Image (cartoon, rainbow, N blue to C red; front, side, top):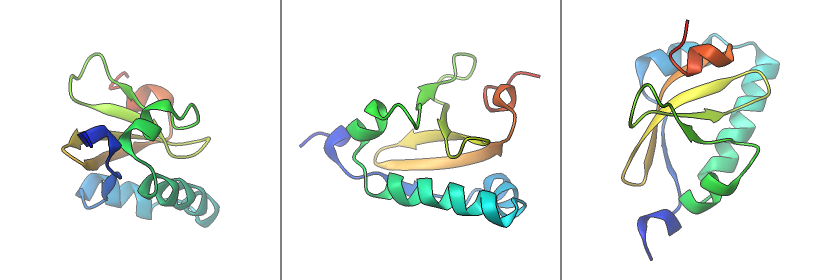
Length: 100
């Protein structure tokens, strides 16, 4: 089994991400948590193939990725071994890609 066949491990403890997550209203929190629960059950290969999650590298920031957590929010994340480490949550699409 290679690293991409392993289940995804989630790290939600980055202060910026946690602050953003806790600032969401209740209906949006429910949507984001539904996606996080889904991610927890996927392998990395499944994350890469899932069109709804739309995992993609940010060209201007090598090693940083964005992933859709709801229709309204994308997260900025990194991958470290089996861990998906969340760095920030963005409502606007450009914010997730480091654009202004």
